[in-house]
Length: 253
Image (cartoon, rainbow, N blue to C red):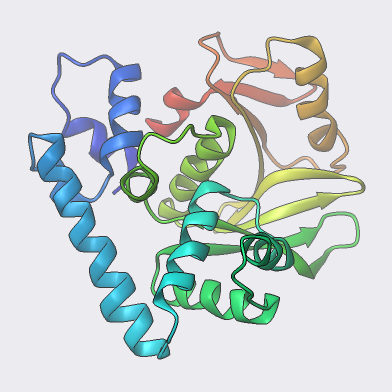
């Protein structure tokens, strides 16, 4: 569900920040919007999770070790946008549950095939070529993370990145991670209107953070639109053609 549709279904008395916080916890699945209590929403999300994992992924991929699959899922949900098959395998092995990086990759591909997660490839902006490594993975719904991990603290920066990715996808874009020398552009999009670049950060009010986030965008030589999306409640500002926009306003634009 697109952000505009989600907001329109929320009670009018909630301010935009409260609606965003509810989105993080309660999911954007249409069915969740019809439920009033958090208990009912959790039951709804539990049904989705167990149907997808147990009836789809496990059965279709003939996965034998369901407990290991769920451990990998928990790791992926807890490390949004930051995935290394070797690192996951190492984490599982360190807990006394040996698994190979190839098996982890197979599990993750099964989650992608079932639309539990999305894989986003990398693109070398200077070299103008698609890269075969360094993919990132994002969740199809943040509410599922909350259901599975409960009140475990979120990395709000990566969660915001995930939300922006989903919105870019829903707007009909092809989406890639951009490699810019030693830096990274969070998202490059391509659609019938052309190419756009997006950097996402919780806040850039500290000068060092602002400079770090602008650096990869400033390194892009073309004149396609470039955006810096943040949670800062500040007016739209332009830095050498890069528009800094409040992300909640952007989601509703």
